[in-house]
Amino acid sequence: MRYLAFVFLSLAVAGCGSSPSELQYYRLPAVAAKAPVVDSSKVLVIEPVIVASYLNSNALVYQNNEVNLQLTRTHQWAEALDQQLTRNLQAHLSGALTDWRVTQQVSSPGDSRLTVQVTQFHTTADGVVLISGQAHLLTGAVVKQMPFELQLPIADDGYDEVVKTLGQGWSQVAAQIAAAITESPSS
Image 1 (cartoon, rainbow, N blue to C red):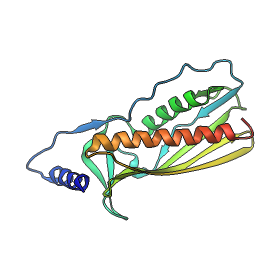
Image 2 (image 1 turned 180 degrees about the vertical axis):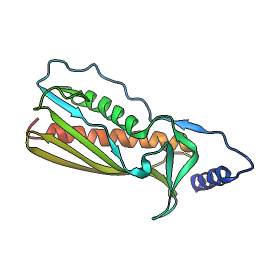
Image 3 (image 1 turned 90 degrees about the vertical axis):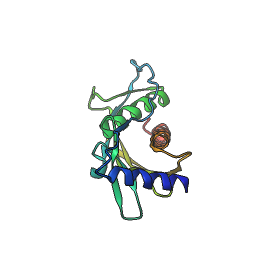
Image 4 (image 1 turned 135 degrees about the vertical axis):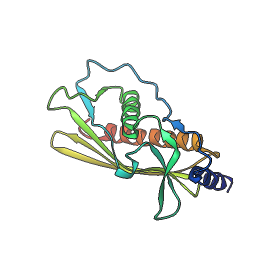
């Protein structure tokens, strides 16, 4: 309840024309990058993550109810969300797939390719973050679909906690994708 009151107060203050609020910038928590595998015969090319059009702005997104989404005015991403998601995904997968070379550069037509589309990546009035979408692994002529959907409670009040929880959720998505790639018969 405290979280809900804080969010509504923040939105109300952001809407007041007479008292401009200071812009706050956020980025997802950094992921430690692993040294790339150079001699691996398995190559995974990560395509840039595609985000739903309502997420394709600098604003963090807040869902008021089942049908209403608001873009925050004073709480902004410091860098485009799709770029952050792509870089974090690559770092996570590099660490998890130790016998793969994980890259964004195609080196041969036989490389496995990973595409990810994110349809939800925001917070709600209920104090949870929603992360959902679909990943596709293309290996040769085989396409493996990997849908993901998470609802994670936010531990404390404030947009710092929202962003940290979104980062934790994205780490879980990356772990799910890594597990699916490892279990894939072509890997």
